[in-house]
Length: 624
Image (cartoon, rainbow, N blue to C red):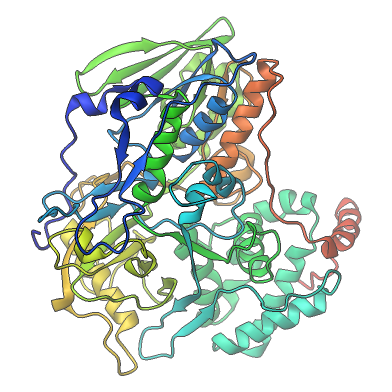
């Protein structure tokens, strides 16, 4: 392994491997999809090879002969392909890269595999599957995996604790992530009970003044008991910063309850983040109801990660399963323009990136599953005029949330879950991955045998000065970003008399090659993340468009989860497929859609608030 030089994009596979893999025929030809290398010393061979198996016959029905072009091979595109193929449609997925999975994919770190080992695994950032995800795990259960009765969903592992390390020698907060062992019985959850639970957590883990903790608990009660109309009319227009009055509170309050719940988790700033999104998804679904075990994916805990690199544990088996269903993949294909005429999409102009030649693809239906920053560039004036919601997508915003993977000489799990460095100016979060890869022996399976762990870190704040160079992340070179990120990790983890990270222990690093031009006049990131400033909801399009054969899927599409997540991507795909089935007058079963949990105990209070909202009155608990 070349120390400190693992940031270059891998060499693409031979064109014959990445071109056009023709569904069932390709599955029969390829036979197996290699997702790992079984070597001496490997803990288990369960993930070594994924057998694609015989090609499954496409279901018969009205879809026979109907072809759907899916534009984009990320989570939303593959989700749409799965649902469509299961209903008998012929599907072709057109993907920009040479590998599938979008931001969720794994990437080989070039030049690092020796002695029969695979190259070190690199990713855009760590994958996180909260317990409130229900649509995506349902799709994962339907992807076969050897030895797992519940498919690739069985490759998820639960984190048991989150660490909130503090800088300057302050005690770190260890937050248990297991569900409550004795959850409250139905009907026992009352506003006073919720307030007491919030106050006890804040009193235990923070230095908040008592009046600030009480005020925050009250604000959460306001949101919990607000009706849907108030949330959409009022809280969607109110920033989280304003809602919790962070500007009038202590620095501790702003860091823990403002920045820590927004920038560090979803790359959006508390000063502008929509209260509806932050309160509903992060505070309610992820934390409050998650800890109480309400609205969860079966017996899932709050924090789940995969037991191997993402492509090995999920994306490669998914692609193999789709091929067995007859799905075809046109790789290295850039979508240039969705062509519109006479009230319908008539084709899509694409660029073959291998040959540099353009061509036009045609289908009966089209599902645009590209990230919004790429999708909207493919919609011409005529298509936009046909459906005004497409033009409103120009107002949607994306920002940088990119990871750095550090490869370490010694196992360094830090905590059995995620790390959230609250005092980090770059909003650094991370996780020690090898501890969860229980079907892998890291030094035996990856690299040259020296690396024993991988600390996967995400930088969410790219516009504030760091502690090492005094520059923003965008202003730094890639090497400076890595050094600064490492320094902020050490600042958070190496205190109170302990040394968790040492420079000598660091062997190498990897950053997504989608980030280019760092340290120059025009840094670029091709893989950004949708953010949620106030008013975002009003510009999010529906999966169904006014064009009868054109549908939208992606985490920017309006869904119940209302957050840029893999769950949102999967839910949007389900909605797009349902809209397509309706347009096709298909008698196929519609995709089931799980929405976020709505506690029955809060419904009477929400009905009261609905009346108060109509009368122009504040929420019952809103004390101003």
